[in-house]
Amino acid sequence: MIKLDQIDRTILQALQADGRLSNSDLAQRVGISAPACWKRLKRLEADCIAGYHAELDAKALGLNLLAFLSIMLDDHSEETMTGFESAVSKMPGVIACHNVSGKYDYLLQIVVRDMNDFHNLSMRQIRMLGCIKEMHTHFSIREIKRSGSLPV
Image 1 (cartoon, rainbow, N blue to C red):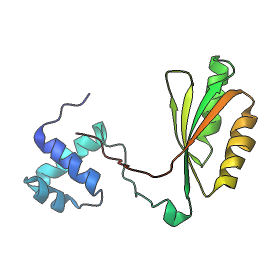
Image 2: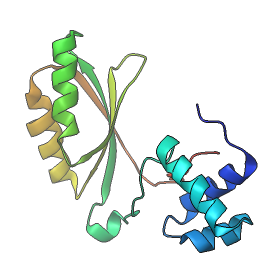
Image 3: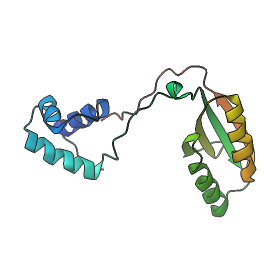
Image 4: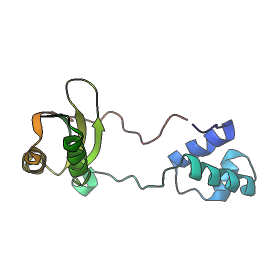
């Protein structure tokens, strides 16, 4: 775990809010010189900034259906789990996959255009992997909160 002081935390918070800030604008917001900010930023990029990304509007792109799919595998061998993880990692509609505790083995977050696309993904791609014992779906009625920001 990286040790962060308040200036580092302020830099990270500012970048999470606006990853397009120039070094001089970032330095001004944080209250330090541009060279000092650049040095800190390079250290943070090496230690804890995983990348810079654009946040896209799913609905503007026609991706209107958000679902959470709980999956139980029929066996828990390393080969089965690795094969499943590799396969779902390649599916564009699967935007997150977590190996979870509890009744199910995996929780997938899926975003697609409509119910027909969901059916194709869940039944014709995921179910056809052949290692699925049980699937349970939750559809998002309304998103209350989404944040890509971590509490720093």
